[in-house]
Length: 283
Length: 316
Image 1 (cartoon, rainbow over the protein chains, first blue to last red):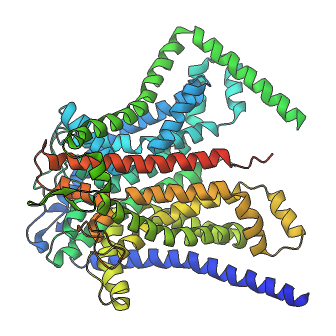
Image 2: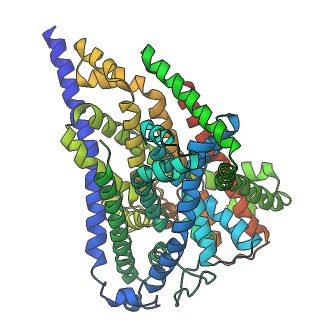
Image 3: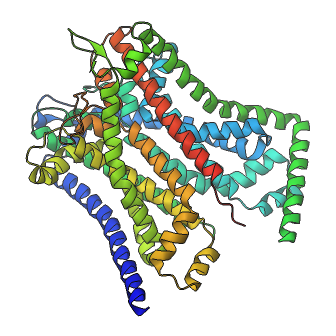
């Protein structure tokens, strides 16, 4: 009896150890990744790295084109995605009739979130670049990325709207507000911090996306910054990808410099999202 | 319990009344239409994807039979002579990466999720969560770079001296790391959704923590856990940049993880980076491969949703 008990205890201890090792393994990998990239990234990085264009010589290569391209594409994408994503979430949560069609739309959105990003690149190529004739422009890139992150934005905004207490709505109706006034002046402001948290995380995902923009024809070697939304462009992750594929070994360090910049931007956005969630969390 | 039910019944009635009032007001009608318009974008996205993939694939399948495409063992669409359009080497490459990454992410992910829900202290969980979010936020191009410049030369080369610069193993490991946070957080959600009374009941019977986890919690949350595995696998199938950077560009049917392979996504990237003329048969190959990729991930997403709906234990 006590023998069996000890055996069970031992099994418990062993598995506890195994599971802990798994988590530590994940942490070690993350630490190795960050250490590896940051240690290589600062070797060739200087201030000129941010103000120079790409080059055939690794020591002269800079990320200016990608940095500005990312700023343009993401800057244009933010209002498009925020407005359509929030509007869709409001419709689904507050206005849509509860029937099979609405359920189908919700199922469709869940499903869109699982489609590989490169397929969105094909969609962007087919619809924006070719059919609508936008060419390989900043606008086409923004719209493509917008469609890519919309499902995530919608689902997180829906959750945010759902978490607004019913009592707030009822109080608003009680004061004689109509539906839209209630949604716009009571529900939306109350849900805004959560909506922003999900939205910022979606933006940081879009900043790191490479495949859909390569697919829709963003350039890899660019010696200019876009001047308008119809100009061609490149983005930071595409430049990093391009540097990893070049044979000269110094480009490995240039790619690391680019990765450092990209990671720092994403960590900052991640921190901002966590801060908003922490600051406005309802308990 | 009964009181709860009643109040929710009032809520439904109230909700309906509000909706009814709104349908009569004209300004609310306009709001309704504008919001509906935004919602339709997501419907058009799905329709757009299907139309683009199917219409461009038709050009391809006009010249290559579907049977040859799906059963052919050789993929050589770009280089003359002896062009051939058998997609299986690409599917095989995708399967290798997917299998390899699942073998890493599923046990590690489930084990970590069990540790976080059953063993760890609150404080430990509070530290781990944001770190996992960082891991989830690393762009895939950075993972690809890490696989090519760190995992292969620093970790794998000393163990397997014959490993090639581009290989399936390093890409599998990197994809496994990439999908790990997803497996952990979805499995954790599934485990957390099991009511505490069930867990306490098992402890009251004198079970150890491992017995509670393995015989009670995991079986109770199984539908959510399996659906998280399937979603992660679907993500691995569609992963592009890691394999484009680290796995190589050689479409071949092999089971050797130390050799380069090409996946479906890797091929699509290769063609879109090259100067394949628009409208040529080579150009349309990417849409045929894309359609197959879309159908595979769609099937997995549907299966995952179906498991979640059909086998979900509903607790009151």
